[in-house]
Length: 261
Image 1: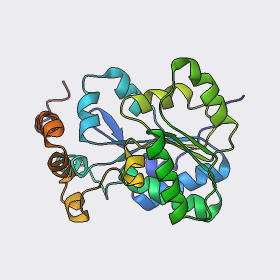
Image 2: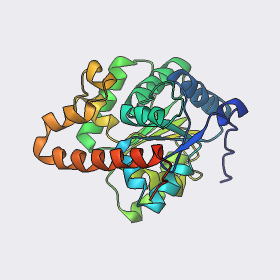
Image 3: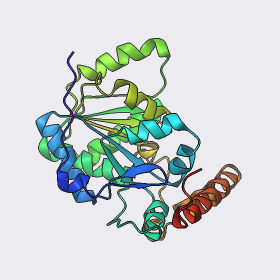
Image 4: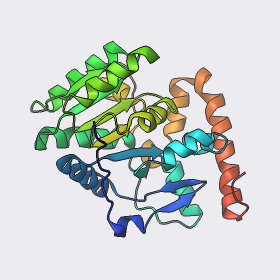
């Protein structure tokens, strides 16, 4: 199977790209991102999308492979308000965040409206099935190219990739944790034979109703991390304390022009 050609991003958008804490960033709006995704699906040209949040940027500092996986994507949006504020603090112009779960939900609505077919890979089987039911309830016209849970062995990978490649999917949502989804996308982005490729992390759990998002005011205030701590204090407080403190130190070094360690 020949490789699907990559979409050529408009020069006007590429000129806005900047590097922040070692990661390329495309400061696009939700509307601009959706327009690019629609073009990719309509023209059957590959557009590999990724979002970065505070945790991912921190992990990229000491994980060269993850940094390469992210930097090799065609389109890199900002998912978290912390990154939006941090980039602005360091002098960059960011119009808005493009949260992964919001982008996925908007793309599903676009699929239902335009007749594009999504494929979802990831999550536990009961969660995935509930998410699909919820999506179909919200978008009765939608037609799935397929869906499969995220639990498979290395021996099953080839058959799985072939199933996706022959499914006729227009977009692929990979609902796995970092760095697994990034590695999978890098390894099979051509073999998948799908125009729009996106890692969505825990978005399927949100759509299924198994994980609650923070209220809108907390999202806008950049307090989603605090909401997660309140939900799961024992598991989350150390993780966020460690990640956020490292991010603050990275921001200070970036602002002072000391570079990335």
